[in-house]
Amino acid sequence: MKAETQQNDAKQRIINASLSLFSRKGFDATRVNEIAAEAKVTKALIYYYFKSKEEILDHLIQSVLRDWTSTARDFINKDIVQMIKDGRLDIKPDGPHFIDKAAMSDFLKNSMTFFRRMLDFDLARRPVLRILMLESLKMSKHHNELLRIMDLRANTADNLLFKAITEADEHFAVSKDIVLFEFFFFILPFVCFATYYDDCKEISGLSDKKLQEAFLRSIQVVLKAMISGSDILYGENKLQEAELRG
Image 1 (tube, one colour):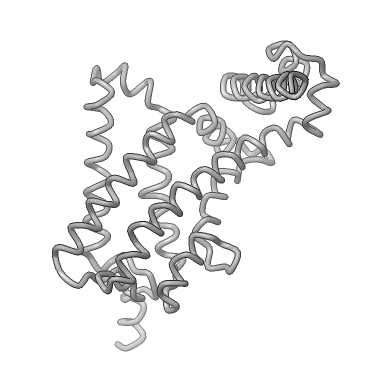
Image 2 (cartoon, rainbow, N blue to C red):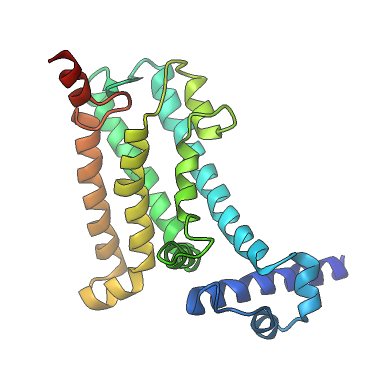
């Protein structure tokens, strides 16, 4: 048991050291011997746990995506799926439809609770998010890693988020428009906010609570526009349909 604990401790030190160095220096500029020195382990031990530096980065990214998926799945099952089963929400090709204003209000409230959880999640993992942002801005082989988040919205049978909703509503489908919209107006703002959080706090002079609430208010504005408007659709674009008819 003691040996196993020591092994787990060594592996975690390697992960923590990699996270720190990747965040400060960038993935490409970090050398394995630097990771070994910071983690206080041998290079041989690093290669015992990870085949390469790339595998360490992949582990960091996969852990974030896995936890993201778990948090989102809880929200979908607890709130979205339950509202569909109760007949209070129907996600049609032109967007979400609510049985009444009370249902829309509940959805908005539950969504904001979820977004607060996601904000806490992202702030706690901002070193990994900084790595994702840094790599996305370079033409390295890892520059598309941040875009892997969009895979969580894919209309595929092995997508747990998509599957959870289709089991409640077999007609549910996600258009490319809405995937792009959610990425650039929901997911990416959270990533950017977490990445620049410390600088924003210093420059703005705001407390943690006021800074986070200000950010969440902007997310609420976008969410309200999304669930009450008709420009961003879950199906085909209405403008294209109008052009075809006209």
